[in-house]
Figure 1 (cartoon, rainbow, N blue to C red):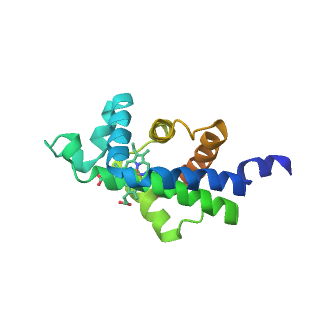
Figure 2 (figure 1 turned 30 degrees about the vertical axis):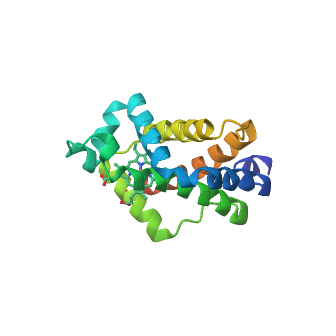
Figure 3 (figure 1 turned 90 degrees about the horizontal axis):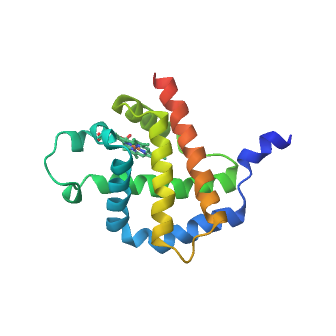
Length: 161
Ligand code: HEM
């Protein structure tokens, strides 16, 4: 069935594009995290209110120590999702982790539209960090890995609803 295959056929080449670009930028996590969040809040200012540690804080964004872990989770888990997709044809985040992710995002008031914003910013941030390496195929591979992961989290959020 062609239709069923289009979403789930993640190739070795796509995995390699994601892993290669992640390896090229991951040591620059400080800069990446800050750019990622600044851009998200430029596009969607109210999203700031979703984060408990931003809502209750007067510390400037730059100096908030809790931003980096979330940003890095998004990058790292998307990269891991690419590896899982190639190996298993689907996202294989453990059931308990996925449940927790679903519950946390649901409880925080995250909506499907937020995932569109973070996706766009994720792709932009990598592109800006790697202008020479970036390509439509690379964008597509990251995008696909992100969407499959985001869909798994969103499905858990609906169950938590
Ligand atoms: C918490 C990952 C997308 C907002 C977390 C945590 C992880 C994570 C690992 C902390 C673990 C936990 O408490 O369960 C991801 C991944 C994403 C994603 C991998 C996409 C692929 C988003 C989006 C938003 C968002 C789109 C909204 C703009 C939050 C908030 C928290 C959170 C508000 C709780 C932070 C707090 O108040 O302490 N996320 N996330 N996440 N995430 Fe995400």
